[in-house]
Length: 327
View 1 (cartoon, rainbow, N blue to C red):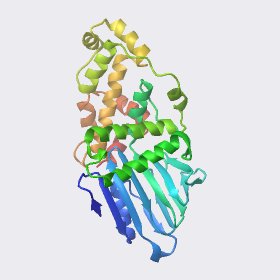
View 2: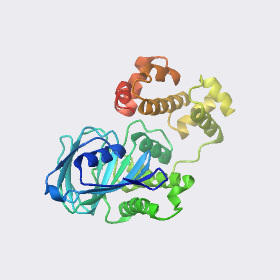
View 3: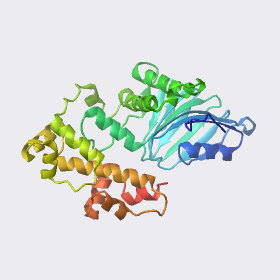
């Protein structure tokens, strides 16, 4: 393994299946790796720029392999630079990834990769579900209650798909430049955002048409004041009157402004922000360090039954399941 000193770039070269599995699991997720081609030619080369909530990498094995895993829990885009492979999610049909056609994996279904060709060298991008949803909400200017449904293929031969794939490759190459832009936190954060938003503009999904439409109108200052305060202090005991006081308008005026410019009532917005914070804390919790009830109460949810129902509607899984898979 080689690390460039920034804590973000890693490179692995190994002929060991076990070491290959450990390197992939360290940056992506646990999977089963099986060599199907000549074992003597097996040699994993993996380069990774780990910029949580995004991981950008490229990988090759030098021979045929097969891989499988359960629900990855993240979005995953694979872009073959050379060679091909087949990929299947859940009970769906097998998809063929080529240098002209990338594949995007849904977080909620098991994955199986077959027929990884010996010459296959692929870009591979992992994207956190919450980060993608937050990015989509920022682009739309409104809350999004359900994750977008992606079409399985992304055209990377031309247009925005090609631009996005080239940006991925650039991020992997930048580590070769002393004092390159990715070493500067302010630039790195902007590039991460560009990569995430670029995917939403390059891939076909259920919100794509809305993204292609006219941009949302600027929000009034009163609405922005409330949103900024809630984002900074989401656990405070808010009610409609206190939010109106923060906005310096009447309760009715604030309700109408939120409905028009955000798409939800002010207190509903508070609830969405709190759910996001609960989700983030449950995902980051060390095993055995907390409980769902403790986290929910901390962020202002007093009724655990209603909280659990809203959490499942928002994130597609129970809070206890998120906690079990944390760490």
